[in-house]
Image (cartoon, rainbow, N blue to C red; front, side, top):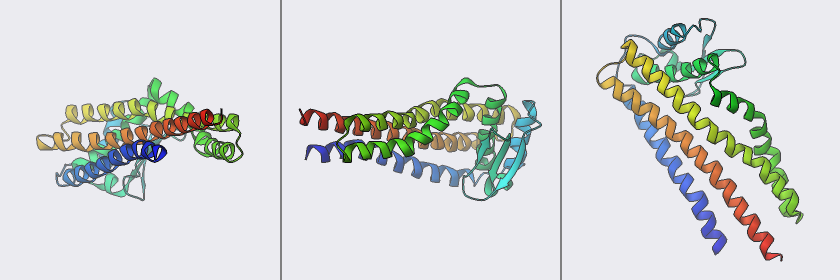
Length: 228
C-alpha cells in the first residue's frame, strides 16, 4: 500500500503536469496559427540569424509536427513544414526560438555548452543506467543498483540544465520579434503564449526525470533498510 501511494505521488504529479502542458501547447499553437504575418517562419529565422552574424547557418525544411530543432554539430536550423512555410505567429515564434539556440551556440552560452556536454552521459544513464539498476534489483546487488541509479541521475541533470537553455532561447526570439515588428498587437501575446506553453513541456519533462530518480532512490533505500 505504501509503495503504491508513493508511486502514485511520484508518477501522478509529472503525468498531470505533462497533460496540462501538452493541452496548453496544442491550444496556444492553434491560436497562434490564426494570426497572419507578412513573412514565413523561415524568413523570420533567417532575419534573426543574419542580425546576429550567423549567415553561415543553413535553414532546412523537415517533416513532422513541431520537430523543429537546431543542430550544433552541422550548424543547421531544421524547421518542420508548417513552421518553415507558415505565415503565422506560431511559425515565426517557433522559428525564432530555434534561431535563439543558434545564437546561443554562436556566443558559447554557458548552459548550452554544459547541456551539450551532458548529452552522452544522459544517453548512457537513460539506457545502461536503468538496465544496471534493474539488474541490481533482480540479483539483489544493491551496489549495482545504486551505480545504475547514479548514471540515471545524468538524465535529471540534463533536464535541469536544459531549462535555462530553452527559456533563454525563447527570450531571445521574443526580443527579436518585438524589435523587428514582425508581430504586433495581438500577435505579440500569441507568440508569448505559444513559447510559454512550449517551455512548460520542458518543465514537465524535468519534473518527470527528477521525480523518477527520487522514486527509485526512495524505493532502493527502503529495500536496503528492510534487509537489515
